[in-house]
Length: 190
Image 1 (cartoon, rainbow, N blue to C red):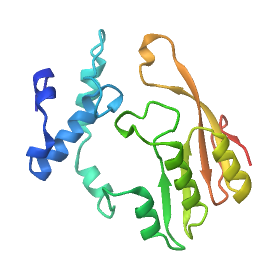
Image 2 (cartoon, rainbow, N blue to C red):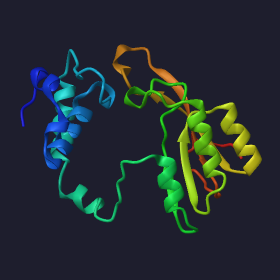
Image 3 (tube, rainbow, N blue to C red):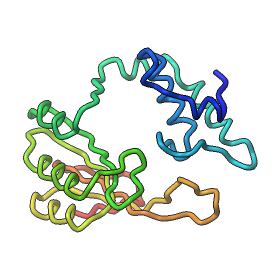
């Protein structure tokens, strides 16, 4: 499927059948800058790496995805509702909410209050969770109060890294169960 800027501006997923809608979302995420659904079209000035990246993503969109997602349930509903309604002793929730204090892109509007509501819910679930986030005083308070395990790693933010001024951020993993990190550059911060 050949796409370009005119097609980019005319994508209206609400007019498509479910398969074409899924493809449109994939195209937007694959070709948008930083995979943002509401961002500009991705491009680069040299090396044709954007075209290669898109072709690679398309070529990898194979039956392997179908097999991998065979027993996965994907919901379009409030995350807190999903966690509460699916919670049980054997449940596992990987939580990767929009990072408060960052450019949330199409998740804009996610607030400190939303993040606190997630942390409060996670503090009382029966199952296990693993949370990805940036560090915050609020998270530190919950970690301390509930004895959660945590690890931190300084990472390069890869969005727009080609401009020659890479940014560094601290990524935090937090869980309500003991875990260990194999990589030498992660710091366990229990």
